[in-house]
Image (tube, rainbow, N blue to C red; front, side, top):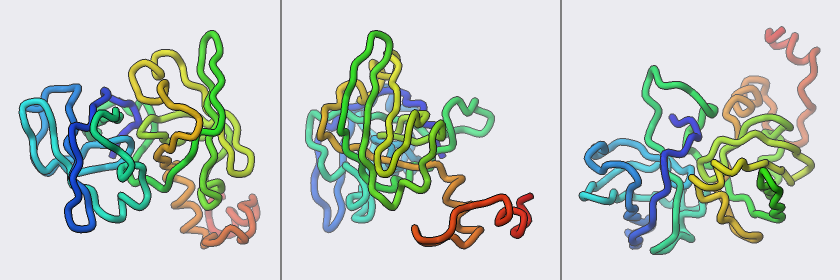
Length: 214
């Protein structure tokens, strides 16, 4: 479990195919000695397991499922990625609950730079739009953000200068793909209410009362 508060940016040192998966080696912005084999690190928002630690880098194995859902298959040596180690019990939850289980890829469609913030507009897969709401939470490349607006398959977020500087979001260009993880709460509510298809009726007060939520 993560918070979406990125600890630093690493750099892809190398990648190599392994059967149907991929092995990524990433330089670390924090002491490598703090990592242990088998622990989880969010790499560009995807939860990966540490399989090797060297003095300045860590290696991760990426499964075929993760490659299919994320942008990690597109990464090459020299690319920068957001990194966050797993949340510890007792830590402050400054972002929101992020699992590192990426739902799919988004595409940057617009980039508007203002004097005090950067506004980014992304297109998301249609199947994800029902989990995204105005002023709700979303993780983009592992960064916890508040959704400004959500219309159809488009969502916008504002990036403050600090976030732009300490994550990879400030370097995104129109057409770039990103990893998206929607808020886990909506997924559980949908499952509990049996709303499994986009054509299912929306959530109403009557529906919530009938299922014991009110």
